[in-house]
Length: 323
Image (cartoon, rainbow, N blue to C red; front, side):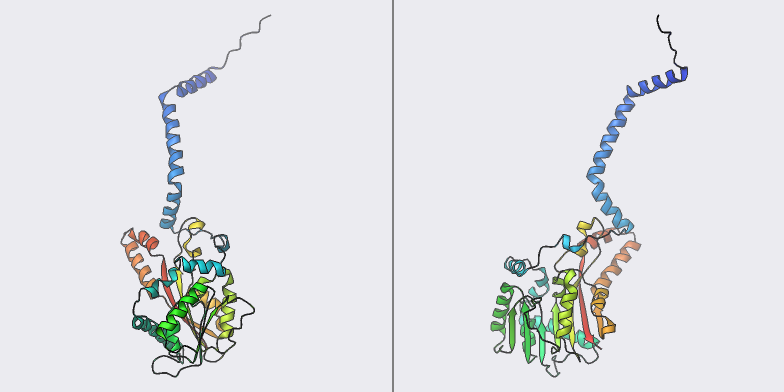
């Protein structure tokens, strides 16, 4: 006995024929082609578009902890960095060939602290020489030679043997009598190291604090505080203010280093007023740059985005003293 024929509703027949006609039409091929091109475009241009629109819309990204990107900052690591010339923190001083020219820079730095600290720094032109100066993370900076002419005792320290060897040659070349200069190759965090305790009148830290991994900054600052004199102790700190870049966390400008990012708020947290410290910073180059970018932005000049990528780090000059 044969089964009776089942008739499909006219509506379903129409729907089936319409779908069948579309599948076999040239429009289906165009749609599939468009989808493939769109997906390929997203894969190729997606990362660039994310970064570009993040700049335009000023979107912030959560940063990944620095420790996930940093190499181990051991003495050997720094020694190799000096041997292979991987020390961008030297650029500002290396451009001065004559000792007289770099000495003028140091005079200006001390004058800045003089203008901020109530009693100024002893040891500059026309002032009484203090007892002790301390230069942590000294590298081969000629500031050690400069301070040796103005202080009764100078202590300079660096973890890299290559750096202290260069520093020793600088002293022998530029200072006739440097018996009052103590030059140490040591890790400042070594508990067996005997650092001054409350006897340092002036601490000169140029890119020392910013060369320390941010997770250890509080330990480093603790040693500086302990070394600085309780009365009249003063400090010159120079760091690098990095602009916050927009984009994936792995490209964030502020986790790069050394030198690592430092700003006045961070420094004020490290030297809080409740502990009797005062902090003043000169960020004129940064303010001028941001002002120019705002002017371009108001004038619909998109080159400000290129400027922000090209000029992403600025010097930060600060004075720290006890009230």
